[in-house]
Image (cartoon, rainbow over all chains, first blue to last red; front, top):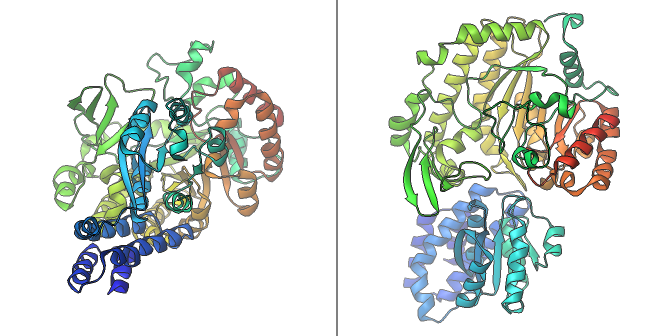
Length: 207
Length: 388
């Protein structure tokens, strides 16, 4: 039963995932096992295949969508069983940048890996990140930028977190077209994510 | 084709570059600029720019030939088939449709809903919120009829345009049929994120969109080919991102290549000069290396740009890996922003081996961004000319 859910997530079949999750719950399957063995492990496999260039962005998206369909059914049972997300991420595109497709892909993969994602949207100033960290107490702050001209706001945000005394409470993750490992190190970020799948993998490795 | 001795020097130079002739001087060129507004304040002369020049996005680089030592134009573009969007006739009405305080949403000429900072249309990249094709119904009712190849307005100035094309051909200029590539076209119709789902959710609609693309492109090209032989078909594709192709090779083979192959076959059969090689040129940002062999095999790719270095494109390595590919671009915009020492190191790595190889046109790896200073760009041009 869990294998069927797992396979349906990988194939991006949202209807079969929903039916599978419903069936598994009715059969008395533990919600945590459905989540971890049926869906999170499937998304981990999707991530592995994506990084190996066996799957591409459309396949990753429909797999994430299929998992989301299953989660819509599973979530109340997880809450009832006190099953927590593996971590919480505050995610946004930085100030001056209106692009969100990269951020959205990262958010999907993070959710697929079991994280709770607080998406602040686009054009978020450093103070917006600070307020979100104070409110949501995340484990990670994820920043996305598409342009070389908006990238510096990532460094300013890291400084803002330091000034607010919050830097030690979070791991900072950065990504986007112009962002590099070197840039991430220069601004003091903890993780550079070259793509959505590795964002989830690298975040999980730091838990 | 006009005899080589009757060609203008720029055309000879670019054709020799296309022939991947080792050791010849580089054709001197730039793709475009996002930097001219900054440079105005940094002392760049303005007299050569047209009055209506968009200083935040300027692509008519030949007007700056004297300032930056470029070669004169060596191509003539036939146009009429879109660039980043389909060639709508009529276009959608451009109008503000929503006020969002600090932002506003405008419907653009391609039917997209675009988020801008209020009152500003330049100096940043906008965000597209909505696209006109959501399903078969919206495709048929709102969009498809705007791509009808028989719309007479498409051809009102055909005679004048073809007279200019024939004059360009008489000087040996490369006659380029530029058009929106299939992926860029589908993305502009459906949206970058929704398109990625649409390959699975509505493949039949995508095929219908591509059939319309083919019919329009083919019809317009056929009219052009009554007057001139086309040297080159240029697809503005943008199918790659930082990590490679956005979609799988199988998807490219299903949704794009059959239409491209038909277009190219038809074009070849109609050529006035049947002996002329038809160059195939693809523009795609991002890490393009994985798609090069695909496009070479399927449609005979000859020329590609712009090889963004931030997406891990190294034109020296790519030049070795693909010796038959004409490469345009590959100069790291981030290095141009750094300073003279970095520029020297970068150019000394790229230009000598690529000149020896041939088949390379050095340009910035996309539009020159505003963080590149005017002083740095002048230095880059000086060194490019010295090494090229």
